[in-house]
Image 1: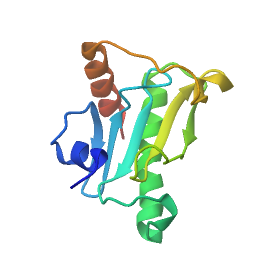
Image 2 (image 1 turned 180 degrees about the vertical axis):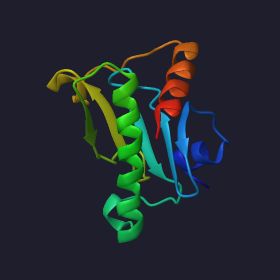
Image 3 (image 1 turned 180 degrees about the horizontal axis):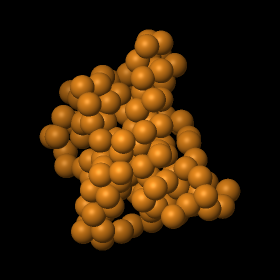
Length: 131
């Protein structure tokens, strides 16, 4: 059975989609550390980031870079931080977290919640900002 991220990328589980191409998918984290916290995944289910083949690995980071630039354009922040942890969900993923302080990317902090309409609009605004 496909994991949760593969099911999100396939549309089986709804998400606040930001960007997608034939190999990658970006969506808002529903338990964010900060407004605009985004997850970027390969559609292919690979548990460990460093098991991805070299070409896909490079392309994943280029895809994430486009998404991060759009996040920064839409969400007021100093920088978009990056984290790769991968212990909770066995599917390689990159966290893009808008940051104004170092604490904004502290994964031990309580997660935030935002109303669904705000999440939908934020996803749309970031999607529009992708170049």
